[in-house]
Length: 405
Image 1 (cartoon, rainbow, N blue to C red):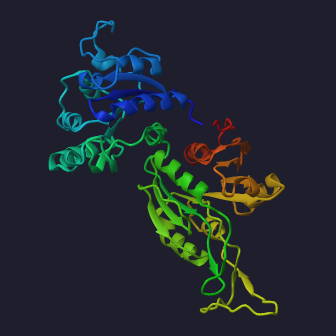
Image 2 (cartoon, rainbow, N blue to C red):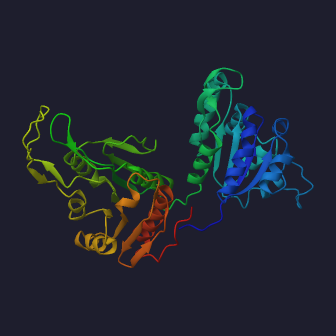
């Protein structure tokens, strides 16, 4: 896993949502992220520097000409050791400054003189957000490579309802953590299958499984965070796909196979996370089967093994498999990996993972067995992606540290 220090410079501007910066700072510190705070003069009218200093454990900077900084170059030095600058809230006025390249206070000059990425969390009245000039400024910022998180719809301080609310601190922490992930798969094209399949028995019944799709969607999110282009072939789930992913909805194993075949030639990496049905009814009924007193016999046939089909291509992509076992995990997982000639396979005990928020993956490759320990599925997915990237770029990897909560 990536062990580089995560350091954020949190810029606070003069929007009513400035009060949320206190909770945002607290949550970032809780996540193990080092936080340094810079405030505009307007922001100090809404929340005191003393509050942010107590929460961050560091002096809060507000002045462009700061005698505390030895060489007086606060607009340069304060961001030099930072991994990311976050402006939350980012008012309409501050977005306009950034879009036009103005630097008339400490925070705006820091953003101009930065060597790290910049993320802004807009917060303003709905009319201000919808104003053509604001939308033009946001488009310019996006074109300049600035990350824009939010805003969200909802009730605003002025009493109106609409777009313009700053994202809640817990959501912003998620965006910030994603932005801090190393771009180890920048530009790599990844095709991922996720979720269960549903094989019809009749018009209303079918064969399926209890897969929620959470692990697969977490892998998709982690791959996007690592800079990959992701195509997601998803069986029936209630989950929302990451907005940057291209999502293809399917139901049956055959539909999933067809979608994979249609896109596999355009991918560099194929990750098979989906819990695909092993069997399907040979003659599904188009009408609902009526219940009768006698036993019902169903004739089943095996479905095509999607992962094996892809791995056996003349020029296969880098293939990653998943194995959910009920017992004897290591033996079955390694046998599956070798049989399908996979460079990497992730395995877990199904009874501990299906429907749960956490997982406990063990990775298998030519170098051996790499347990990740127990942790949230997104953390597990990030560790998997880091390991995958090392194999994809550099060959066999060393053992990984366990995933921390």
